[in-house]
Length: 209
View (spheres, rainbow, N blue to C red):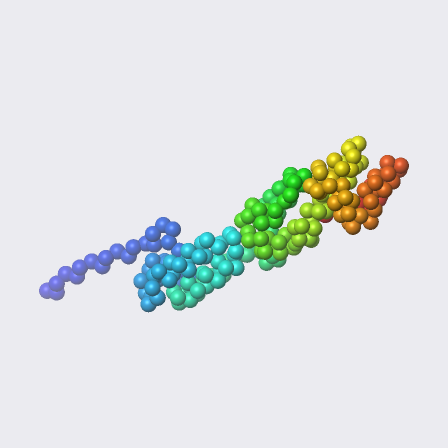
């Protein structure tokens, strides 16, 4: 009589949180055991990707590609949202950036801090912002400051020196210089023309980014 065969040990399922690669369905832990590459190299690459994921997606993808190459595993191509293909900000990022700008027009706005607010590097944020809003952040912010100044000139009796400060300009001269550049008129001339003909307030040239 043949000796009884000992039962095969059960195959362990991938642990919760294990990363699964490609159609093979191998977990990272399983794939790592088949490697000649040192585990610390893979760990470093994956750590770099994790740290750069939101700050610099391009750098994250590069680190992951090198890790996949060491694993000799073909990564799946993730589904992309339409705005990613076009290089735009995600809807929540665009809304958060625009809201922050509107709420801080009376103060300096640092582009680096604005990028950090939506968890992007400054260079990537500036490019995506331009695709989403039609202008890079600084010109867009200037346009919003001028639009606010126009509104205050039409709806209040505030002097231009006060309006300039309320809109984030250093002084009235700064406001006048940017206002003329963007609208073709001086603030005083623009204000007088619309007060003289209030029914035509919306027909004049104004700047709204």
